[in-house]
Length: 245
Ligand SMILES: *C/C=C(C)/C=C/C=C(C)/C=C/C1=C(C)CCCC1(C)C
Image 1 (tube, rainbow, N blue to C red):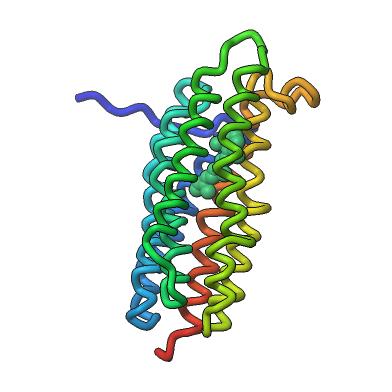
Image 2 (tube, rainbow, N blue to C red):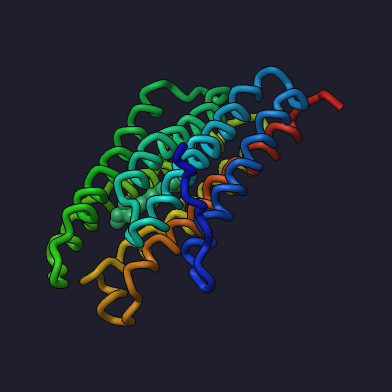
């Protein structure tokens, strides 16, 4: 019989620590969102289901990412981007579900998903194929192309269709909630490019000497804020506009 190795957190390894905490937090959040579905009106149950799926998918990826990081000491780039490619479109679904009652059409959802996939595919190319030796050209070019997708989503949430629909919504909670989610996209999502720039040769790596382990540190912090926080905002809207006790 082969006993699997015991995985421990090396003392002082902050990144490993955030992988473990991230895993547990995503798990706990999923349980919370799934159970709380029974407390909201029927029309909000899908939104809570999606919140729970986002954190659950992340929890499974964190389970594998922490092992990958502990056994190789490297960034689990592929796992990270698979996670995001599933969860960021689900966040677009949250925007769509919130604004649907105010008239959102399916093509809004598709535009957000295409922008998200654009952002992530080019980000992945920038990160996974970053040449060794500190040449910045590659990561800058793909980082900029990726940012176009990000800016599109940001624009849609603040001024474009999502913002307009929320404005027309007759539910004050939806109005407020969409505004809060737009802040998440502006501030919470902006943490990711900061992590990206800590890659070898990245601007923050070169200018401030922030090493590549900070890529995961920023991504883990950002994921906790954005996935759990975003879900809690949706939960807040749902519970406050439900008639159930
Ligand atoms: C749950 C995961 C989320 C919300 C992931 C969001 C990821 C981003 C907003 C990533 C953005 C990037 C850029 C804007 C440029 C550099 C490359 C990325 C992919 C890190």
